[in-house]
Image 1 (tube, helix red, strand yellow):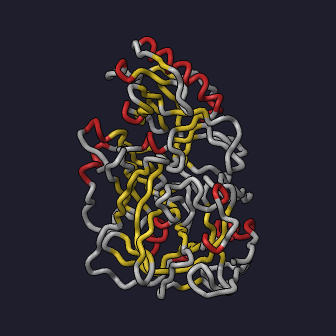
Image 2 (cartoon, rainbow, N blue to C red):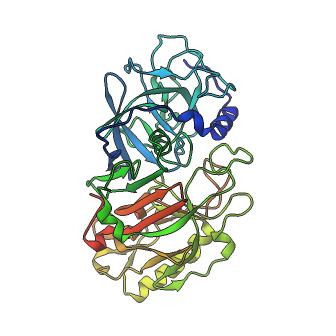
Image 3 (cartoon, rainbow, N blue to C red):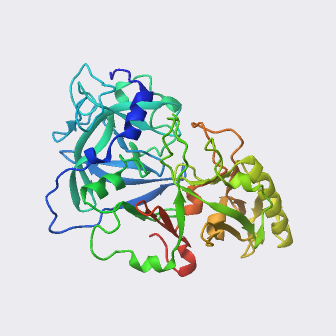
Length: 428
């Protein structure tokens, strides 16, 4: 249905695209509301999603949350239409004139001519997909927002999109796209910040089980923070920039849009794990370091980190009289949950600035079946997946549950709470 697009030039243009073209005049909102969206957890994939309305008439879309996602993209299938959809024309101020897509009709969102291409990237799928870049009305909490860019892709229009070849592969079954929260100029937090002339800053609080969490896409958009009470629990560490692109297509000289933090050491029951310092830092090729992900359900450690980590953890667990049982894939360290009590070894990440991110028991262990709980860390292997580079540590969604995270992109800082449960609070 849609014509093929030269993906390399598309991603290059998106990466180098000027911030100025995203800002647009806006009528002042006399009754501002925070840009807050609810977050739910999908039990089958252990991933997280939110819901927002798009178009005229309004249609609600469930969208998977991706901290590495560069934009908002959604499946505008055969049955979808919107009278307020405006495709971005090739060669316009909002689209560098390097590529163009067209369509044979019938014309609708996802099927327009002379249209700027927009990516629909999902790191859980095999390929990079392209749809049309456009503007439409978004309904975020009590706000009706126009002038924000998103990508619309008609999955039904590509008969070859089946199984793991679909843009929706690996995402929760009830979702129809991704809301990207990365450093990209096309991510929703940055677009909202530009539109409202505020510094880009958003918060994220992932729920556990069937509870509900939240994301505030633009902290500071209203006077008075509705979650100010939680801020007293946070510590702050710098966000660092990986100078090498970590996406599926590496563009020379373009840094990564993902969020990295500087882990100086890993402690188990207060003792430093014996690791080569080089494993925890980012090398000249962009490998190494620690990034935060919401599309990885459980923390992955590169094999050279995982092996000494699991060895030391099992020793500490044995000292604490935890009864080990057979492993349950993908987890190696599993225990009789009746023997655990409050005896799980403590894990601390020592971060830049002298602060510690403590991973408490609820974020360390996962119940896999009756009376069996496993350490929710997995061996990430040695080779990168859907990327040219590999992080040494990828902090996954389970370790983030009921942790308040505030990403301050203007000052490049991350504020984090560790588990709110120890303060008799939660993301819900």
